[in-house]
Length: 108
Image (cartoon, rainbow, N blue to C red; front, side, top):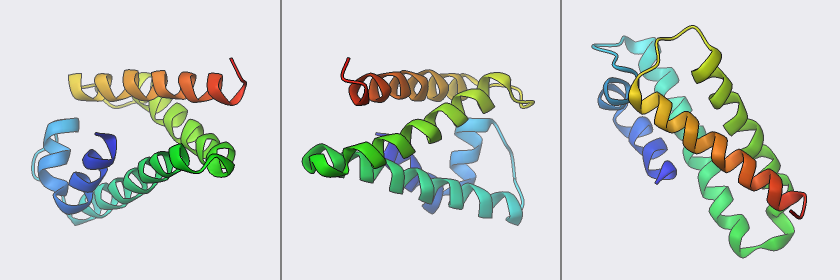
């Protein structure tokens, strides 16, 4: 589901920015960063799925995913942007996944 959201941001930045952040008519620079964010999100999520089938890759891939998810969690909950309900849902999901991935790597 998250990989699909990243792909949506890559291909359809304006509707994604409106849905997630409540942004209306963002400019070209914002589109660029939304597309880049979408591409990175798609890649990290795709690699996480890949790691499910190739155990030797899990450590580094899940470590990278944990960092990405913790950063977005803190940016959403402690950053300067006004939080939307979609941003809150994303932060809760990513925070939960970061905890789950960390527990897995620690063997808990």
